[in-house]
Each structure stands twice: as C-alpha cells, then as structure tokens.
Length: 312
Image 1: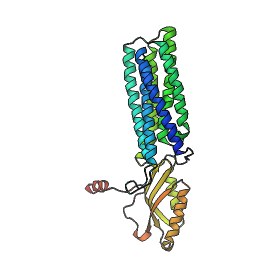
Image 2: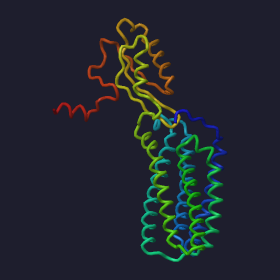
Image 3: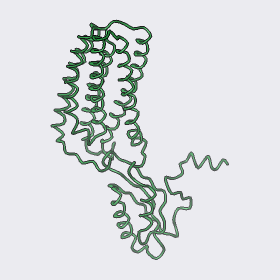
Image 4: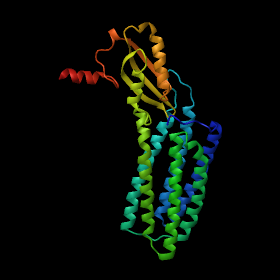
C-alpha cells in the first residue's frame, strides 16, 4: 500500500466517475425491465449488481471529495480515510448482494420458470459493453485507491456476470435448459462473495489501526535498537494513517552517557524508520535512569488491562 503513487488528476478522475455513474444508472433500468419481461433471474441479478455499481461509484466520488480536505482540529490526520470507509461500505454491500443472489438462485432451481433467451442475450450484451467502458474509466484510479478499487471490482464482476447471462441465454435458446439461468446466478453470487471477502480484509486492517501488511514490525524495532545511543525501545505503535502513509509512535531509551546527544539519536532513529517507508514518526525520548518501569514492546497497557492485572 505504502508504495502507491497518484498519477490521475483529481478533476479528471471525478469526470470519469460521473460518466460511469450515468451509464450504470441507465443500464440498471434497462436490465430490470428486460429481466422482468424475459423472466430471467440472472438478468435481474445483473441489474441489481449494476445498481450497486452506480451506488459504489457515487460513494467513491463523495469519498474522493471528502478525502481532499486538509487536516483540521477535528481530523488532525486529515480526511483521507473517508475513502477507506467508502470501500468498507461498498464491499459490505457486495457481500449482502451475494448472499441474496444465492438465496434467489437456489429458490429458482427448486421452482424453475420460463426464460426469453433472445431478450436476455441482447440486454446482457449491451450491459457487457457498458460494464467494460465503466471498468476502463476507473481502472487507472483503482491502482492508487482501495476506494476506487472497490468500485472497479464491482464493474469487473458485473462484466463477468453479463458474460454468464449471455451464455445462459444461448443455452436456453439452443437446448431449452432454463435451469442454466439460476446456475449462472449462483456463479455470479459466488464470484461476488469470493472477491468481496478477499478485498475487505485490508480495509478492516487499516480501520483497526493494524500495522502495514508489507512491514516487518520486528525488523523495524531491531533497526531502531541498532542505532548508536539507543539502549532500548518500547511502547511501539505501528499503523497505517491511510493507504499511502505509515506511522510509528514509540518510546526510545537513550543509553547513559549519550543524553547530551539525545536529539542526534532521535534524528538517527527517524532516518532508520524512513528505510521502512515510515512517513510519520512520534518519538518519546527517555533517559536510561528514568525509563518507564512497566514496559512492553508493542502497544501499552490500557486502564482496562491494568485493572484486570491488579484484580489478580
């Protein structure tokens, strides 16, 4: 995450998202009408997923706007995590849609219904073209933002869904296999669930103040302790501010006899952290004689933990 670089002009990106929202809303209406007229659950499933695409893009658009606000006294780290919250909403929505489609697909397998194959094929073909256009509009931005990546994946899964619907229409026309329609619906649902559950993990990790996936916490501590003048390091917090910024908060104990060069030691520790792609570091310097007594390497004891330990 930390290695990402933003190449897309924000205003150009906004125009792409606005265009993608417009075509997806038009497509949703066409697919729902077509699905009702043809009796195809797979087409309606594709339509609902398309509506979620449009909503995902609207959420992504709003989050991009909010994320550009400068830091203030209410949000001292800035508003960049608005995009992470948007990604969480979008992936959660996809999971709910996937579960609903599984339920509907199984129901249709139990009680099959007639399907108009030609109508299904034509509408799904139009949908596929629009899905591919929308995916192309958001592809470049998806590399730099988990928010836009969530919206992009909505579109990719929808394009695959459209392909599945076309195949179902052809099989229904050729062999009269109406059961293919709910089977394709279940396949679309399975893909949506697999994709969403895979992608939602990093989003939750970031919101839970987890350490960067690509960082080795033990190696970071080892490099801090290896700095000349550092006796020990404790109460280390390592987390992601957003996709592009990692942060460290730690207590650094300066060896006895090196207190007069404490500032130089601190600068050397900061330099060591930059080698681990740490863009923000808050270091509390302690002399060896007055270092914390109740030390733990990562994090620190909260009031709840302290009370729990005391009770024992």
